[in-house]
Length: 184
Image (cartoon, rainbow, N blue to C red):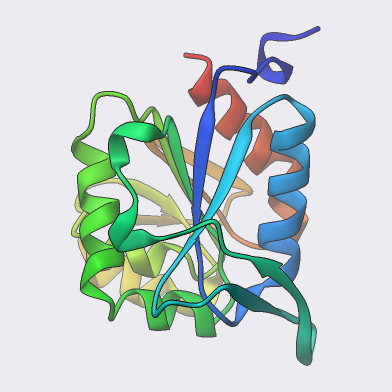
């Protein structure tokens, strides 16, 4: 068993709301759980479940484990921010979600904050990208650059605690790098 496939002592918070890119939540969640990690879905606005976006329509729903304002950053080893256009745009306007991501970045117990596609919008809102190497969906490249980051059109970028990727095609490498950071 490789070190990246042994995440039995690791707990990861996925922060999402309605409109998350379905593949960018379900696939990393399933892969990380298969490696032994415990994943909790954190959301906002009292939702007991959230609905994904798949292609051009609403997709599958997933149960919410906890509201972000009730979550303690100290309970987790990592944070994952799925993309999609709707999900991160709503989350970046939620003070509790932004404060959770900021606190995660400062917490010693958190070894990774991973964002894919439009997910880096949350990193921008939390003021975590300045002078960092960031990958994202190309349509938010200017947002990333204007926030002071160096934008990269690469499958995955790692800079400190941050792991960022462009799109669903990058999920295998994205998950691999999340697992490596959790075991570092």
